[in-house]
Image (cartoon, rainbow, N blue to C red; front, side, top):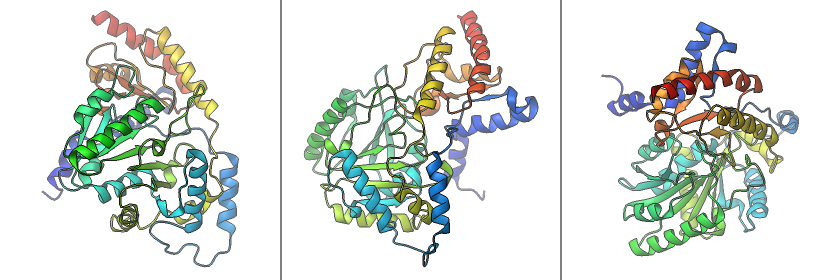
Length: 396
């Protein structure tokens, strides 16, 4: 067998997100693209702000020596300086350029963090539901993923988190706003989590790191905001990207920010930069690094996503679905009307509606809807959601 056994296992278990996306491609060839309602992939459909293209054109036209050449593995100093200055204002803590590493998106950021922190057998504790790729990232670097159920509204269950953090725990990973639920972990919960981690680090005689995956940080609604972990715990790192707030997922640009008070911070920064190189990223894309220098704080029109959320919530509730209205991101995570979420997803598929079963995110009994699609797709899909609900009701 040419392919590694582990990869064959990964391919078999696979990501439900990609499976449904591929199924959508097949169905569109059969039924026509306008007759298939694909809510499987969190691919932003709101265009980047006009200033993104204007700035990119300016960057491309700049005559700079070595513009396309190699650079420090941590990234361009001008980029890291711009990011650190913005973060210092946003989080009310002084963060230096030396505490930033530019990365190939949030996925690259998490992988260099895990490479730097995990020894074989170390645990990454994550609240569930969670983004399925986390398990693969932990495995990449010898770690194991340990999931902890959240409360019914998908907020942190701190008692369960406390019980789950043990002597093998090296990282607690949170994602807020959360994919797939859209939930935000609020300040009081983060403060309490910081206290738990301080106590547990002392108990086990080694630092336990809090890592916050924040690509949806600016995609929030109804006056909500995402608290900064740096205010509550010093052994903390932020991993993020510009994929969602600037609608640039294909450009693979993000960063890691490390709390200036983190244990052995200089050694950690050196490890992160080295990990960028030896994992094959080398450095984040050069043009994108120059682009984001001038775009700190810029964001897509979040109001567009809010209107899509509200239209979907209204339609689903009228059809009888039970769901928590999410304060952020661009996902809904309704309760499946039958216990078997995979079976219900297949019922929706018969209506040419593509969503992802909650089981794929460690949240069985639910399903994920990515509503970053055009308004017409949402409107045309509503009758199919109603028919699937009616069929589910007739089964009980």
